[in-house]
Amino acid sequence: MSDFIQTTPARTLENAVQDHFIAAEAPFSTVIRKGQTLRIEDSYGQQAIDTLFYNAEDYSERYSNQDTMREQGAAYISTGTKIISNEGRVMLTMTADSCGRHDTSAGACSCESNTVRFGNATKYLHACRDNFVLEVSKHGMSKRDVVPNINFFMNVPIEPSGEMTIVDGISAPGDYVELKAEMDVLLVISNCPQINNPCNGFDPTPIRVLVWDSEA
Image (tube, rainbow, N blue to C red; front, side, top):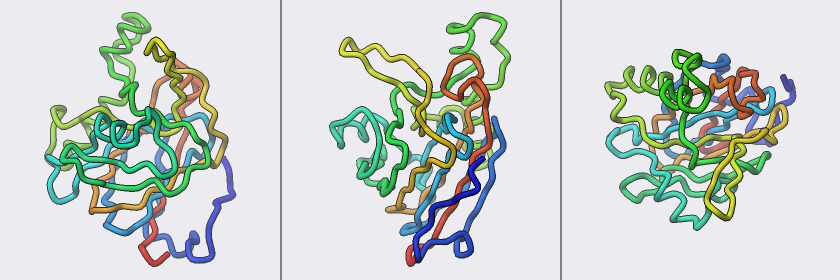
């Protein structure tokens, strides 16, 4: 794990208002207030971080991968990307990206997809969809509220034919993304437990989430 956390004169570990270590394979959620900066750190490298955002005041408004890709005219998410809701509003803006490759097309692993891709022996392995359902249930939602997500740090090349393949991640220990909240949002993460494809280097690892107030 990288012990070095890149900071700015105004944004340090000491003035972070939230600092969370999320165990390998675990779910997580927290509220990010409008104007705050969220950092998601891939602490050990090559770890897919499945992520959803909901309007913290109205969970029926949530991240839309289709609207986000259409707004940017791009299949991937990076610095400058506006995270768009199903209501067409900007939820967050990505302000920093030390990695450069983040997928929002391949979705979250599930028991069903594991079975199709990797055989019946994987049917009951832990999966991101289970994590999402567990975490959103804490906020009064159900599996119907789990929508196509962002996969931060997951490397999914798209061929000219439209075919997608999950390949080795390019993120190094300590790589991070930062996003500025444009509304109060509920952040929901599944720290991906997948061990059957290279999205996690076949070895799921812990991650870190930090939040700073707007003046930082």
